[in-house]
Amino acid sequence: MKMNGLVDLYKSIKEQGLSYTIFDYTHNGIEFSIMFDIGTNPFKLLLVKKYSSLNLSLDINKGFILETLLETEKHKTLKEMLEIEKGSTNPFSTTIFFEELDSKIPKKAKKPVLDENHKSVISMAYQCEEQDKIFPCGFVDWDYNGSKKRYTERNREKTRLLYPDIYKAIQGKNISIRYSNENKHANNNKFSDLENIK
Image (tube, helix red, strand yellow):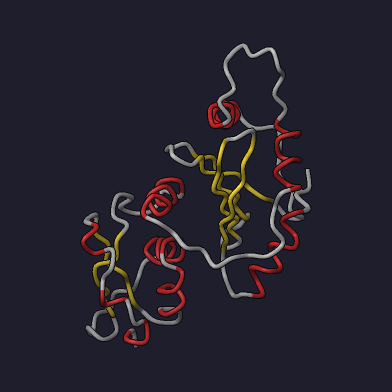
């Protein structure tokens, strides 16, 4: 099915120079955070059930098309997220669920503000390198060090997802971000002024 609601949201993401946005959605009293990511090919729609570790990553194909006939594991995960009991007398339709979601998609993107839980879930869902390390604790300017090494695409992608402002600041630079699993780095002063990244 075509996710018409994503069309305006896509335009708003592009206008603001973002690569993704996050919005809230509630279905039958169950709260979700939903991430629409246009920085991947195909685009991604990540559904995260709040107050749990359950998440579901779906491809949004060219023309904003979402395949509603989910593979078995994804279908099972979605039903678990929606707390649909096995053997329920009410038939569950993924198409109806996604049509309802589509009708509630905001038209305007908001700059994402990620808390520790968001970062942790995104890191796991996207299978980032060193998934448990989500706090930046330093950076390496490979050119400044005179090294022939370069940043890795996986490091750059992790930074795009977890720290969009840092990602923007290091565009065009041969810089890698170091990450730690210790939240004492959560308010790392090295990154409070992104102009310091030259």
